[in-house]
Image (cartoon, rainbow, N blue to C red; front, top):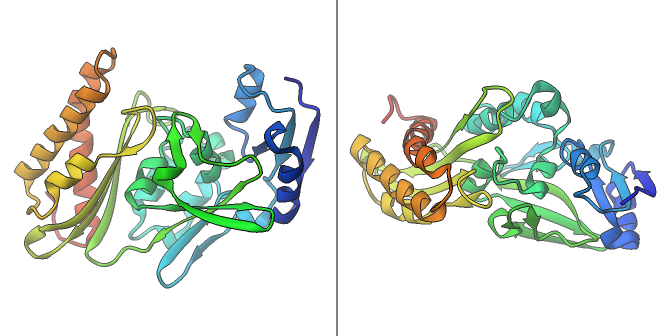
Length: 292
């Protein structure tokens, strides 16, 4: 479909008014790294574009006593450079730095990465592991939704036609909590993920797992939580044997999910090492000396 109108708004309020008026005819564009390709290939059918790349209120990273909030217009380059994320949230910095080329990271935004809902989106697994919440605004209304529920299917999210994703927020990590991320792609800089895994850990004495959230990318129709592996690790002391068994549990989940796909043989073997690396990074992020 031919693009008939393009709006460039300077604030969220004006953007919401446009969305309310045009509804399904309208599409948001921020970095444009995905939608431009979709328009060129005829996949995207919207006739009206709203450019939000100049809205400063969407480009803020804010830290409160309990939460970290990232505006949906923050680019991956900005996340990788953000000082407040470099300690406990180094996994987010690592995930952001692994997205595409420098040119893509300079343009692509966290909001676009989420709303595009690609199975291989690098930033979704760590956000799922953090139990992140998305903030959705429409004219005269705001609602919050767990990211896991927001992502419905491959390239499909629970965003209404008149809504704008304005921010993503998650709780700050405590001393005994950590986050790890690991990715495998064909090429280091430009790779679309073939496997990515993020692990959140909360440890007690003797490295006992008090709580965990595990999320994967490129191992299903969209990024998702691996709850059976989480249940297996719960209340267990984390040592190499336990983590390896957890990897085997994950391997079995992938075998069922990807049954019949040509990529299964490769992915079910590679995932164990990727999972172990993510767990080890999360373990170290808990400020515990050594590793698993």
